Length: 198
Image 1 (tube, rainbow, N blue to C red):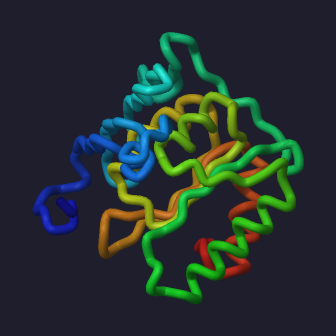
Image 2: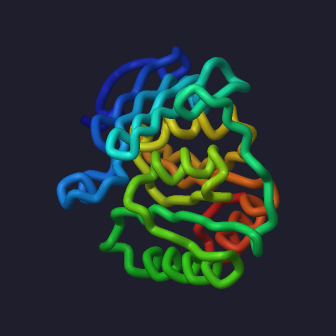
């Protein structure tokens, strides 16, 4: 259910769980989908765990500055945009054609400026692949809090730069995660298109 219809104090820590992020992939037998849990407080992502069961990967945090993949410590390797592989998650706002066009334009621009921009079908997987350095950045629009909370805590603990823009009305957000310069460049290009706030 939508957390916006639930009465509770977000200033107190609360758990969010997503039993399947990447439902379309899961239904179609594509191995990139995630099960995730995260502990949040306001716009903070405190701890989390994300399992990619078909890929036999378990990402988790142990405190704010340590994250792991299958027991091995993760540390994000920061790179420049032209050296980076990036992933995107698009919003479900198909009815807002102007916004959708801007999202596709940003996707194309980042694809041209980097080693490529992928759409893998799971925001949590995108963010965890970024934390582990398989990707150098991931960004998305109108992501549900439960889709990304656990993964964001993992990326933060792995040393990724994180930029989020929370929606006031619903529990959704725009996000950019990854290498310092890449996050800044994606944000700057998206800001000029009206996709991200200052």
